[in-house]
Every structure is written in structure tokens, then in C-alpha cells.
Length: 258
Image (tube, rainbow, N blue to C red; front, side, top):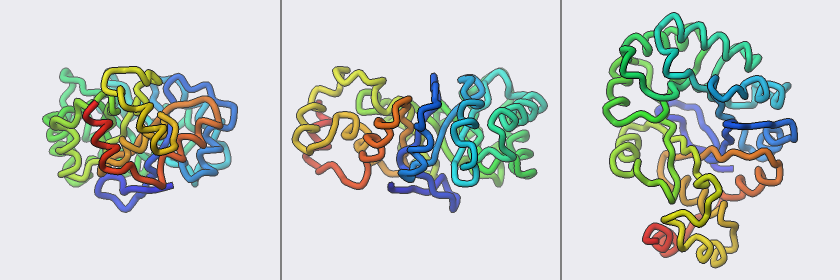
């Protein structure tokens, strides 16, 4: 596995982790990820999978990086603190490695939300603060409100078939050392989607699966890690094998010009 820093911190995270949206678990997926050096799992209170994650990593908590998210309707200070405690109970842990705002809520002042996040960091319940689906303006406001607590990450949809963040969000994150956590990096498995016309050709040329090429392309961007989702342990091996090698420039050009 290859690792990158989380934001401006000394914490290092794998380039490939695993998402828990619609995760059913129970088949060794997260334990296989741990064995392969990809012990990063992303869940959310909205997903309803926090208890399953806790069951699947039982006994490995100290070796697992857990990211979860608070829903946008729960961003008032006292509500957020209560929901953080609820996530801690469901995850059966004393701390959350990365606590993220699932999406912005313009009806709740970001200063109030981030004051609660700072309180969670100060008392050790949360180690790093992140956001999800935030624009550049949203990130600026979040960091201003966080003060001395760095904004560690922004979780965004990003794949070869969904490159919108390259216009402004990705460059801003790279400039300010905010890690991009790419969700849906496999284009939801639709390898015939627009923008992927050269995928099969490149995969055959480099001797990798289409999924591995897609993941390698995503995490080949500076400051980006990816969280594919699977319920099959064998897919964990496939995803982890997407790192440790690099697409040649002409292959990247072929993919990006499709």
C-alpha cells in the first residue's frame, strides 16, 4: 500500500480505503483490507452502517482509521455534539479519526457548527475535522470558522467519468493541503459511461483490470485517496492492487482525452 498525509497533519492514510454506503459486511471485507494495509473505512450516520463497521473491525480498533459523517440537518452545536456521541456508541469507540460534515447547510451558521467540531477535537472525541461536498467558498468559510484546527479533507465525487472538481475544488485543496477523499471512484461500476471510452483498451495494454486503472488514475492525482465500496473480499485485493504502479503519461493522456 501507498500512503499520503491527511491534510497538514502527521497522520498518514492509505491511498485506497473503503466506503460503507449500503455496506452489508460480515464477509471479511474490512479485515482483508486491514491485512493488505488499507485499514481506512468511511461511513456516516445517514448510512446506518456504523454498527456493522464496528462488528467487522472488532479487535482492530487501534489499527483502523475510522471516518464518519454527521448529517446536514444536525449541525447545530448541541445537536452535533449529541450526534457525535451517538456515532461513537454505534462505532463502539472512544474517538473518531475523521469527523466530517456530510454536506453544507446554509440555514445553520458554519461558525456554530465548527465551534462544536473544535470542542470535539479539544476533548479528544475527534482527531481530525473534514467536510464533504463543499465548494471552495464553503471550504474557506469552514476553515475560517475552525481557527487553529486545520480542515483536513473534503470528500467529493471524483472519477475519470466525473471530473467536475478539477475546475476549482481540486486545485484549491491541493494548494491548501486539504486531502480529497474520492467517492464513487469506479463510476458506480458503469465502465461504459461517457469519458471511459478508452478504459478497456488501456486496461488491456497495461495488464490491469478496468477497476484498477480507474483507481490508479484517481489516486495518481496529488493529495487524493479513493474509497471504493465492496461487499466481496476478492474485490479488496483487486482494489489494493491498483497502487504500487503508475500509469504511463501516454495512457493517462489517452484516458483523459476520451
